[in-house]
Image 1 (cartoon, one colour):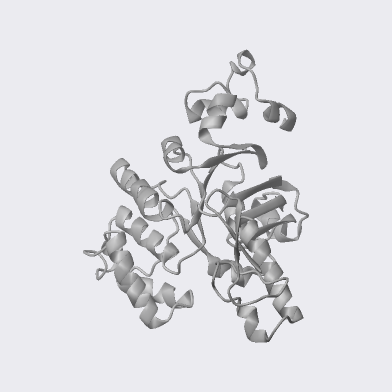
Image 2 (tube, one colour):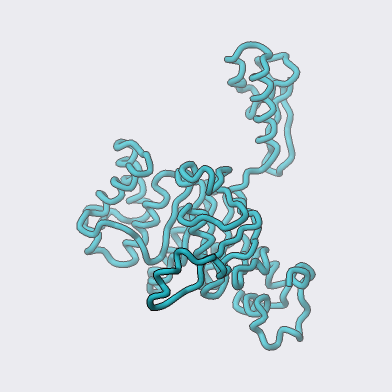
Length: 336
């Protein structure tokens, strides 16, 4: 019988199963016994497992899937009318039916002006907000129906709201949040030791958080976000409050310690175009809750006849006064 697995080029390789002569036995790794054999012979459960394994081996995983996602908020009110806001009908559009996927191990940037919907999207994926319509899934789990499983699979990190206890040491904070993420005490301590070296926190790990610099706290926050080995990492303008040196160091951490390992998918919002050029495999351009473009930085530059991501953004969002002098890409003209 055949065992089907996926090669590094995306096609399938076949080899014989050493343990079974059945007609529906597939093993994810050639020569490795199918666990369904423990269920006995050629049972129905055996075949179901085989088909699931075969399917998973032939289809690439999607880390994040967003389908026709919409989010509306009640209109902003002031004075005494603010007390009525929770009871008003949501009419202010933050996300207007956006759809895209993030692949396993991929880094995707959200690019847009303030109010474009970047933070709203990240909060929905982090299960902090409920969508009005549409659906979103993280690591195969629906953010609305299976929020607890989603939170086990992701790390969420914002540039301003770190949420640490200032009078506790960095080590005590990481241990506390590790236990919240269902790490055992032993595993949490092992991860802290590893992450302290990985993020150069050895000198800061036993100091109170309130005594640490902004850049160090940012690295501590990222260490917390990845401490439980998340499959998906969400970052909301992570370098917003950093100076140039700290921001450069932080991008280096992401590039070398997170992305090059290929085990974590990254979705991040940023206004720093250099950051997007350095980190992003693909870029989603948002404007007033709408997805205007989604492609690689190189492809976006080519399609808009632009030399920089700044020109790309101005061109796609129609803020460039000379936009009519350059041709639009076909997909962009259809979407607008």
